[in-house]
Image 1 (tube, rainbow, N blue to C red):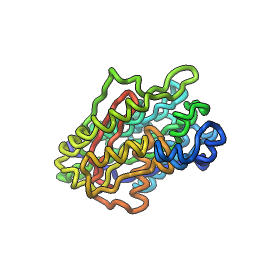
Image 2: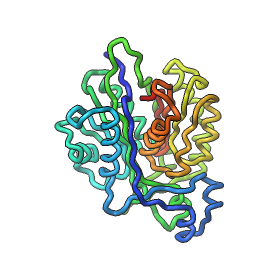
Image 3: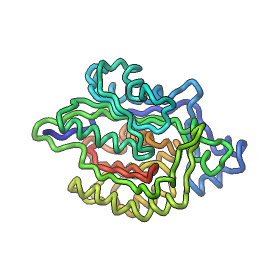
Image 4: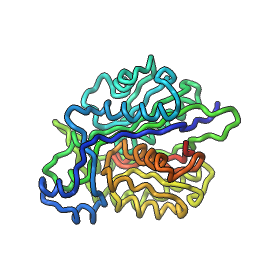
Length: 315
């Protein structure tokens, strides 16, 4: 068994932008209220004719192009999403059809905000076991479609988008580029973040999530570093789920990654659920803020009160 590596990343956001000032005309809120509580300035919102698989497909095509691969090179497609409208065909199959990928294994992973890091671990395991050689791992969500736009406690948070990574087997003897995953959940607190009902609507117990994220998760994130044989101070970057700037900054500080770039894409993108980590990671790579081979902690948390994190090497 050989380890696997992320060889390319890509991201996509719809053109429509919703500002805090726009929201102030829709609900009782203000730019100052939103920034002081969650740190968000803008978010991208998909139109009614932009389904989740279209967002995912654009991000995946960008990652494939960056890797120098064609759709025929892919044999596994994993899509992390919690905003698929239909039960079947699943989002992975729709993305595969959209891109023209012939005959892949195609699975959706619904772990909400921690979905991408769960899917990345699953792809790593498949490649290590020899059941896949090249995987597309995508996080994509259209949160605007499950949001009550009259509820100021949730509508100020959300955005739409997608991010993708190409995962390939490493060469014999090459150091693995995806470290061991540390994952788990708190099922008895699963109702703290919900997308449920008919039509489905996003709701959360914000204070419960904040306390859990800032008190319980730092030690878990440090353990994810330990599993890769690294100290937090060795990290070049930390990409946490982009839930809220008031969660990201304290959590990053408590992890102890004193030399790391901390992704703060939530400021311009809002909370894009499963898309948030690959979206923020791809932007760091695209801007050159991290270099090839740099160790980066990816750490997802939130819906179901699930979490998953691993240290990866930058493509």
